[in-house]
Each structure stands twice: as structure tokens, then as C-alpha cells.
Amino acid sequence: MKFEFKNLRNVQRAFDEAERLVKKQTKEAFNDIGQETAKRTKDTIRSQKFHSWSGNHSKELSKATIKARKQGVYWNGARVSPTNRKRALIQTGNLLNSIKYYKAKKELRMADYGMHHEKGFANYNANMTVMRKFITSVSDKKQKKIYFDKIIKPLKKIFNK
Image (cartoon, rainbow, N blue to C red; front, top):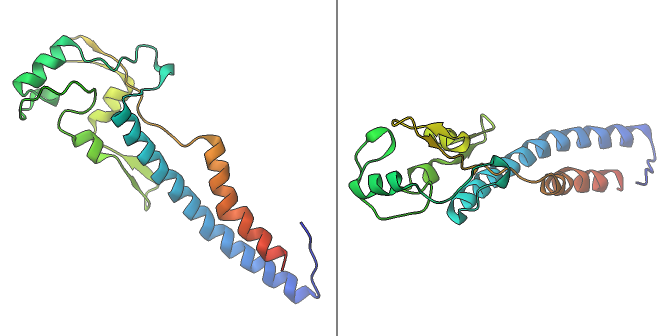
């Protein structure tokens, strides 16, 4: 970086501008990463490519789940329209549609039962339901690119005036 300032006043202005920019752009970068995480999480469910580090991470539904879906039985025994869908985590679309990033709280939210599927759980028959790791964060490389584009590039412009 090249720093050439004619006087102290210009230096102070540049640093004030840089401080405002960093605060604003950091908030935007966090929001971009949150939005991207929500998008990637939904894409993982749609593609059925659950993360491999989860151990038992089958995308195949058990026979009991297929039977329950055909009978219109949903989470915790609730009744829904019967279906022949055999894609994991997509029966009514509720979980998929509930995945959202909230800027004000800086958090990813979804239907409560989503975390049970993420971690695996014992169902009402005491059978273990497999983990389906679907929450997909943004890679470090992608985060660095977002930060670079949102913060470093604009800072370079300020200090190269």
C-alpha cells in the first residue's frame, strides 16, 4: 500500500473514513455470510448431499419412515397429507422453508426439529434416527473473499487517494 498524505488533516480524514467503512462493511460481510449459509443449507437438503463427517449419514429413509409418510404421519405423530416422497428431510417442505438468516440477531433459524435431524435422535420407538448433517457454513476461502471484497478493497481506495 502506498501512503502519501499532504498534511495531518488529510490523514485524520482518511482514518475517520476508514473507521466508518470498516464498521459498515463488517456488518454487511457478516450478513452476506449468514445469507450464504442459509442458502447453502437449503441447497444441501435439496441435493441430499449430507456431510460425510457425521458417521452414519444415510440419505436413505428407513422403511418405518416411508410407511409413516404414506400414512400421513409427520413429526411427533402430527397428521399431514400422505405422500410417497422418499427424499430425506423433505416431507412437507416445512423445514426447508423455515431456514432463514436473521440479520438483527445474526443467527440462522429453522424449525426446531431440524437440529434433531442434524444431530440424530432416538425416535418414539426408541430407534436411533441417523444424523443428516445439512447445516452448511461458508468455507474459509469464501469468507476471506467476502471480507476482501467488502473491506480490504474499499480501504485500499481510501488510502490510495
